[in-house]
Length: 343
Image (cartoon, helix red, strand yellow):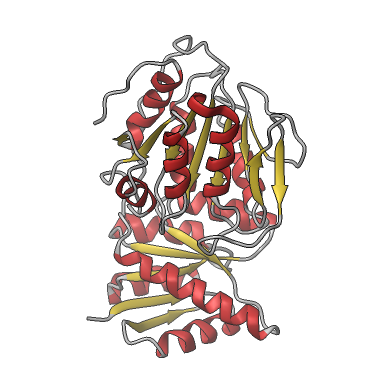
């Protein structure tokens, strides 16, 4: 049975392109097209679509406001469609925190290869709505300060679909003064990771920045791989950005980061595989365990999409799984050398 799709976008070019793409797909049916948020909210009520593609920046009512109305009436799968600008990236992150399950960047005219890539990405993300857990973010368990003193370990994190919202919950749960470095890969395009790093930094628990090539890893700081570059930890303890080919169709890829961390830190490496499509991080998780480190996965109960954690678990690379509201406490216990109890 085909999924009903509502397209909401102020660009006639984008509306037509998305509609044309979906006409070719038997598993989707476009049931409505709206040119702004006001029309989109009403059509969502009237047509009851399974999925809404929602432009971030629109006149009359923007995508963030429209998303709030749509989710308040009846929570459903919403895929944001964002421009590649700082304002667009910031607004997209707000949408992901408020219930949208994922986003794509707006297709650009011209280069046919880029259009094909944009189409494939759009259809992949739209199909992911079949497996997405729809709902509002859970409030994490806040870990009390002063329970973690060691700083000779590293925490490496992998996330994809649903990751920005989950990372916010994770950072909110960590205590101020968390001593270990945290190095993260979130699958996002160029232009969006800087906004995510700034958002995580604003939470005031663990300082966070977008990783820079040659930067020395410091305890008590979090580093986020920039979009379009792989991030690894070099043998001298510095971060290294590379422009080697994508793996699993993604760049940055967590497998590169995890494997490098296991080589440098050995048993003092703690890996965390959060929500996301695909299997990135699975091979890296196995590598961490092979060197004596530990790996925690996000439990299916809180994942937006239980893809990456499941793949790592099936590969034998996960020691325990935790709901996102408990994973911060598990990380603190893990780096302190205590065994965390899975939920």
